[in-house]
Length: 130
Image (cartoon, rainbow, N blue to C red; front, top):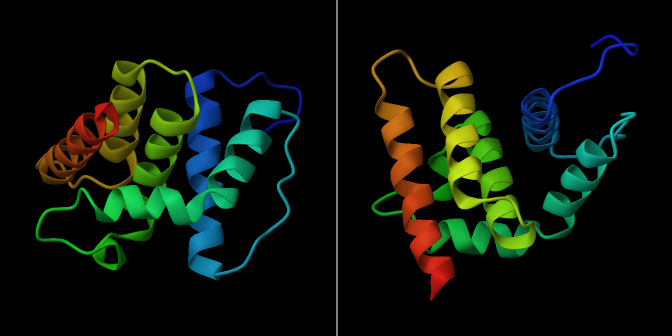
């Protein structure tokens, strides 16, 4: 990432997912070095609310366990739940961005992971409305 470039919100979300992936894989907190407040605050927000975020995910996975999710899918879903639960981002934007990230980093062209992520986030959306 070039320091002089300006990242779009979509690109910032991508950086967040990459950092959450890295933290999950290494099982340790790494320095969050970014000039973007949104990136830093989002990662810190996910990490400081990880227990509640994972609880929401666990309550909405059907016939699936959170530890069976790939690291990248877990990062994408965790960040989406953080945005849905703790931020004012429109639900449609959160889910659309999560599906785009899934297409780019997880899906093998058969749309199975996109469908899975969409179903999980739809369950979570309904769960959070209660």
